[in-house]
Length: 530
Image 1 (tube, rainbow, N blue to C red):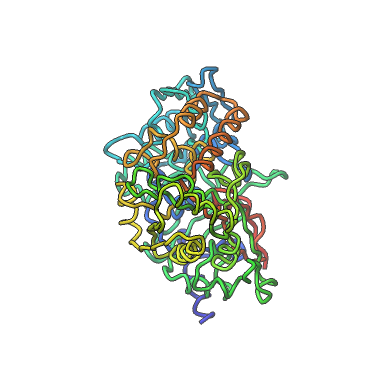
Image 2: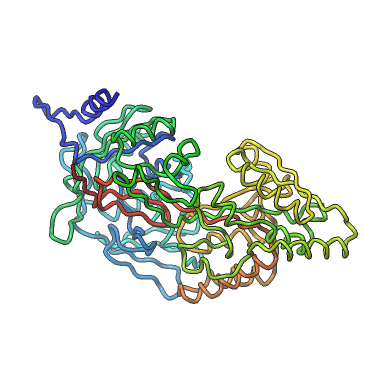
């Protein structure tokens, strides 16, 4: 079995160079499996992790996020923001070249016209990019000279730089897009550390080192260190784990129920048999898992803040995460904003207090005359265990709970249409600003036209939200974000469950693989040893 895997690896990394055939030193190849498959290498369609990761290896944007989620220069060396927050002027680096491409005589220098083309392409109806919304607040994109790009907004939006870090906003080679049309998805040309060498769809992909890449390390050595990235597409997570255990993959991202107890103890530590070969890396991930309560429901239980608060206090989040998630995740005893953002983890949320929860239920019964409060939680199958745990806990405080299961797509439609009283949901940040989470409580974002699925409405909250959008200073916005998060917790239109964590199992042969709170895969400074 292992011999066959090694033969396949060598076959995967076999490269023809004219009449000469060579193989790459295995220690210069980073290998991972993408169980969800990669569907496109066009950054205009990089809307989910599988495609975002691959595009991050091939493309660059004006700005990017560092490991602390700070916006830092990428292909723009610096930028200026007007006092009114409407005009962003970027100075483009002059040493950036596109990757070599067979269709053209020579890889050429990147210009501001290329960025203008790439960003305007997002809003082209013929392209139909799911990233078009990123440019919805942009009124104009202009080139000032050969190296300066100006983006003008319709209204101030302090998180705009964060939006530009998304892979949607990568620079592409216009000539390649025009030549290949819809087939550009498999003929990408970017400026990143790697370029596409081979793609056998649904089987494997090979990326090779881009010798035109601009970054160097602190000693002046050209990056990346790796010669290649090899990606397989095994859909079975158990098979992926076996490949890792046999040494045929360099890391696994996330933990699957099929093997979580093989790798982890109940306290979330790596089991002893893997300590010598594997590094376990956990980090905050910008994802809040929660129950949403639809406040426009006619169900009387949902109209009572007393009962909503009782539900929040009526179950033990720490126990739930320890026994059902092997301590992967942080119990949500703060607000809606997760750890990893400046305003995250500041607001005091709900902790388990069965006696207080029981008293709140009794107060609800006294005030309403409803002697048998009952609620229904709707969830997908992957979160059934969490909801059944909550069901049993809430029955101890006197709230009968029914759990219904729906397919994820059906649940999303029903949630958006307001057909569910209580629904299990999550919010993964699109960009690193707490505004992204707080938009869930803004009344002008009522679903189905926005992400306010609970139909929560609070005038003070709306005023603070609108005021925050006018403040360019991050510290000033943070104060308002904390106030808004406090209102959410007090009014309890949601039940925060846990703040997610990214989990990586990394071979000890690998060094330099860092992560951040958006769980980006960055291989630019990764090394391998025997």
